[in-house]
Length: 433
Ligand SMILES: [Zn+2]
Image (cartoon, rainbow, N blue to C red; front, side):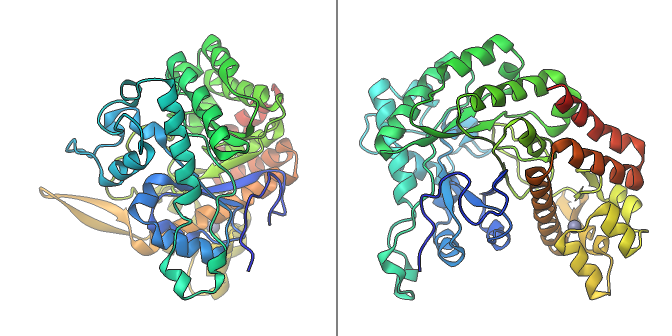
C-alpha cells in the first residue's frame, strides 16, 4: 500500500484545491476526530510526539493522512513557555530540547534560547537537528511493523517546517533567516518558513516592513503566518490589526509563494479572496487568539460554536437561539453539519440536547463550576470540525462576498441584525482591500 508522501501544494485528495485545510494534532484525544475527508493535511506538534508517538504512528498508518511536524522551537524562547506552573521543565520539552541540541555546545531548556545559542554556526546546527527530528521521529520501527507487511515503507512528512522564533524584534528576524536557510540545506529541498509576528509589532507598519525584508524567498515552498494574541474579533473590529495581516499576505503572495494562516477562522478563510492559500485549525472552538505562551489547563468552559452566526456562544445563549427551532429551521439557520443532521435523522433528539449537555464539577475549596459532559465535548468537536469544513469549502469555491452575504442573511434570521453586522464588517474590510 502506498503512503502519502511529498505532496505538493494543491495536490492530494482535496477536491477543493482553492483553500488548503490543515488541522493540528495537540493531544492523543484529538486522534479519533482526525479522519481523512475532513481536512487535507495533519500538522503534528512536536511536543505531543514527545508525550505519545506510538498512537500517532498507528493513526498515520491507518489513515494515510499527509502530515508534517511543527517543531515548536519558539517554546524554548521564554522559560515560562516550556515550564510547568511549579517552574519545573516539562518532561516532553526536556526530551525535545535534548534532541534539538544533540551534538552542539549548548543545552536547550536551561535558559532563554537567544542567550543559550552562542553563535550563527550553532543556530545552523540546531536547525539541521530540528529537520532531522521532523524527518526521522516517526520513521523508526514500530510495534505495528510486526502486524503489518508495510515494513518496507517508512512514514515521511509531506513538508519540512523550518524552526522559528516569535519575531519580537530584528534580533529574532536575523536568527529566523539563518534557521530557514540552514533547514533548507539540511532537508535538501524547499521548506516551509514560519512568520510569527506578535500583536504589538504587527500594528507598527515600519516594523512589519522591516520584518518582510528579512524573509527568505529562495528555498521556501510556503509561508505559515501566525499573529499571536490577535483574535478573530480583533480582526473584525480593529483595522490596525486587520490591515497589516492583509498587507503581509499580499506582500508574501507577490513573491509567488503560498501563504497559510495558522489561526484558521471564518475571517481568515475569507482571506482566500486576497490570495491566502490555506488555513490551519486545532480542535478547540473558543478563540483565545493563539497567544505565544503556555495555555492554562482546567475544565472546559460551556461554550459552543454556532455556525449560524460564525462565532462561539455560551450554552445559555445557544439554547435560547436554537433549541426552539424545528429540524428544518435549525438545519437552515443554525447548522446543517453532518453531526447535527444525523441527530435529527435518528429522530429521538435535538442536536442541542447533546451539544449543550453540562455537569457540575467540584473545584475544591467549596467551589463548583459547570463544564460540558464528555459526551457534549465529543459532540462539539465533531460539530465544530464539520462546520469549519463547510466554511473552507464555501470560501474555496465561491467569491467571499457571496459567501458572506448569504451568511449575513442566515445570521439575521437566527439572531437578528447585530450578528449580521459583525459579518458585514468583514465584507466591508474585504471590499476595501
Ligand atoms: Zn452542527
